[in-house]
Length: 390
Image 1 (spheres, one colour):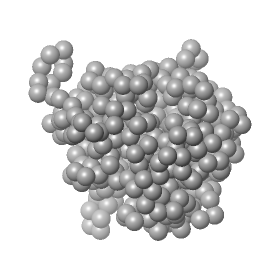
Image 2 (cartoon, one colour):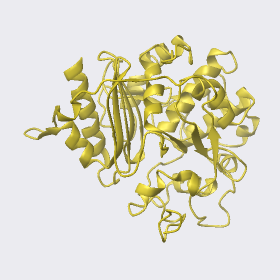
Image 3 (tube, rainbow, N blue to C red):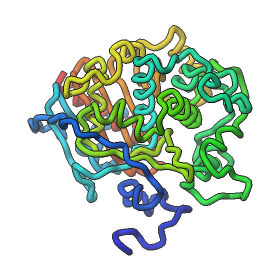
């Protein structure tokens, strides 16, 4: 081990179970990143009011029960926190993570990009029904021609793209290689994210069923950079991160051209995820009182489109969220608008329960072998807290 970096770690294995605990907390020590500044504004202070929520009972499968603390211990948790009515009632760190330490968010990053879209929309710089080619004309030469910003926000493009890491032929592996997050399997692999996106082709009509595609968020990030006139680190700082009362700077992984991995490359500290999640409780207003994204954007996110739930149910992959939907880069696991999720691979989560006035967050390096079961357990644990306090 040199300067804390594990021996034997490389681009080929840094996200494997052997190294994930270290690498998810040290992304900027391993791949190129750019800072998303918190700015110079005041930190949104979360009053500490500890409550014994770890002891709350969680009921899972019939005949099976545990506690919140036991669920967290069993799902690779590095840190978890719960805020109730603006007070932090639980905040725990494990395995070397601390309150000011950044951790890779994976696809929780998508929800941050979605908020940037909302801010740009509110400023009149980006119309969600506009075609993506109105912002990035080069997209006329690939499968995204004809797609709208709305299609990308709701993962309803018709692009041929798979996020299945278990499939060695899935396009997500080529995206990682183009970003420089994995060794290139061929000299023909594009050298940057934008070059890769231009190779993608359409397999079905845009606007069809929901299908989870990380590439949709990456094109969305490209559109944001054009509409906002800045690269994403500066744009997200200006429109979002400097206004939520963040305690720490965030970072984003970048390719050789400085383009960010919008779909899953952001790292941030645990408490700041709670601060971001609070926007969904407060109609887009931060804990410092700043209107960060328009109330109308939050209302649209919660309400969804006329066919959002039908499109979600018609998707080709099981989501284990009957009656739910995906809107503006966030998940709704149940019918109705009460519970909002931002979630990412290996167990990253922001949980918002509007009825119970709760925002919770979890940072993890859980094994993908635990899969949807660990996600369901975490969701049940946060639901149990909300039921107890609500």
